Length: 129
Image (cartoon, rainbow, N blue to C red):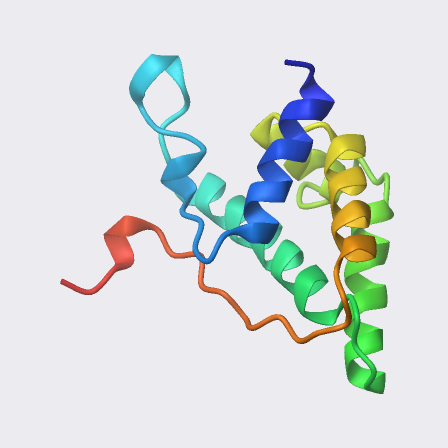
């Protein structure tokens, strides 16, 4: 599977899932990198951006359109100097930025204008017992 196909598949799963947890994407088996505080923060930034994109893609309010423009600008940005830029986060998670952008654009064009509720992306360790 090509990197862009993998990226598109992962983003499509993020866009369609009710809940996505970091451990679905990395763990300690098969030589993958264990979850660290830094990676958890990076994942939180990435998933928050996907969530904002989903919620505000078809916004009609000024606030919603402003939020969408901000997240869209971040997604389309190519800043390699900022550690939490879209391209750096994609690199950190092994996603192809072009594939993620393509999946987001396809999702936006395929969806009817509707409100998408905010989702929580919490690691298993933070779930209530």
